[in-house]
Each structure stands twice: as C-alpha cells, then as structure tokens.
Amino acid sequence: MSKARWALERTTSIIGFIIVLLLLAVAIYLTIIDMYGFIDLVINTELDVLDKGVILEFIGAILLIIICLELVETVFSYSIDHKLRVEVVLLVGVTAIVREIIVLDVNKYGAEYVAALGGVIIAIAGAYYLIKRGQEIELRTSGLEK
Image 1: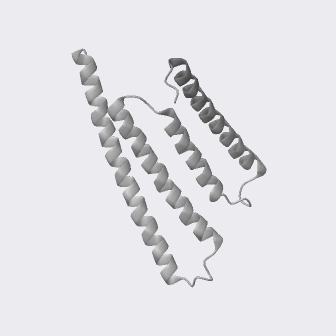
Image 2: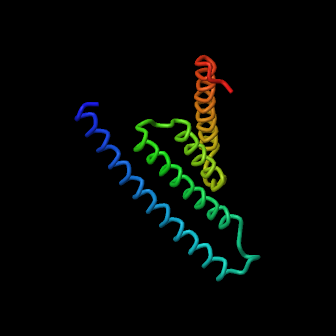
Image 3: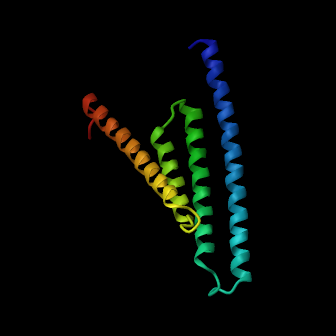
C-alpha cells in the first residue's frame, strides 16, 4: 500500500472516530433529556391525564436515539473497514420513517404528505430488497451458499 493511500485511510479513520464520538455524545444527551422530561412529566401529571400525544412523543424520542446509535454503528464500521454497509443505512431510513409515522399528527398534514411517506417507505423497502437479493445471488454464484 502506498504512503498516500495509508495516510488517506488513517485520516478517514480518525475523522470517523471523531464523528462516532460526537454522535455518541448526542445520543447520550438525547437519552438524558428525554428520560428526564418523561419522568418529570409522569411525576407532575396524573396518569389519567397523560394523553396519547405525550406517549407518542416519548416513543418518537426513543426512536430518535435508536437512529443516532445506528448512525454511530455505520460510521464506526466505515471508519474501520472503509466499506459502507448500505443495508444498515437503509434500515436507519426505515427507522426514521417509522418514527415519523408514529408521531404523525394526521390533522396537521394533508393526504399528500401521508402519500409521500408511503412512497418513501416503498422506495426504501424496494432498495433493501434489491440489495439483499443481490447479496443472495452473489453468494450463490460464488458457491458460498449455506
């Protein structure tokens, strides 16, 4: 391996680790803020007063933390292997769309927005299917099938 290639890989690894640390800090911060806010809400509100919107916001916050952690894994994996695992990126996208659907206020958005979300779901699911199918075909043709 040439010195220039080694320096480039080393630099991208260092930048990747810095990004991983920043994303972890954001995930930890979000977790602390969300848990504190939810605990404070539960303590200061009667349980029968808690409405569906508050619980859905909490679930949305948890999914946001999961998205941050998945991004941490993706960047960490890339900084080590220097290969982007597209299926993980697509799964992060699916998680983000699911989060958006869960916290969606149907009265606030029109049918066009909901249809656009449906289109995004179909596109991501189709891309994920094609990637997995391509991996299966590649395994079969290379003779490594289980």
